Image: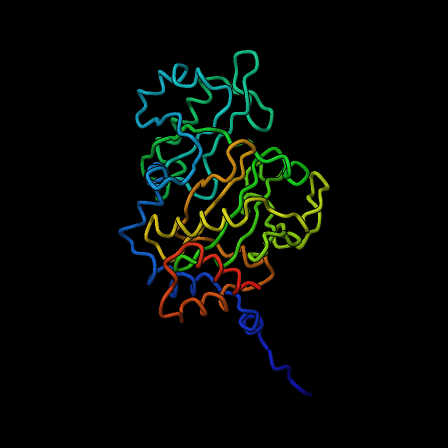
Length: 317
């Protein structure tokens, strides 16, 4: 009886160029991401300030709550705004984000339609300050910022939330990109671990592939029925340029950059991640390693953002 040349599952993954968590940590995060620069991305307020200083568009910051005493003046702080987002400065994985979509009968209406009193919003901020959602459980601060209004083109493929575009960048060169679509299960949040959909995007032209939901391939959004493949992302080269500039901004070699498309302001940078996840490979049905190793072998990377974008698109062609 003969034996297949590929006898074990991990051998098949290797032939497909799939990168695992240990390899990501040992070969790319440890050697290319200096620990001293982690605070620039782990603290969203620092990331936002850096981006603004470099002329990178971000959602407008309305205020920061740093101590419990400030919650007493929450009504005064939120008074001018009908809608907003509250998020932990050191949060991760979408945890602790509260989206307020409007007001109704003196209460705040969350994105899922549930009403919350000002005391309830204050209690949520208090939990953020306690470190409930922060990296390592350390005391945190709460950012209050502009609520992104997604581009109408996403209306048929998103459920009660704003889709975002995650791009992994290595040595300043975009490697893989995907769109993350909120679902009913994810409670309107664009986080794959909470039940959002990942949809691969071709770097060369910004056109979407089919999606993956809980590691299962899908062609339609489970809540809206919208087709996932064949969508052309507007501002595509501008989005790639923003992600490449984020590498220059924080001095980290291997990052994930999250961009949203606002209907009024266009591409906005949401955050930068120094430990980007690996599900983007499933969404694109392609492994990281071939492109990463090609870029790693290059003695010099183009200094120009435009040249780096051209290189990324050539590698993806």
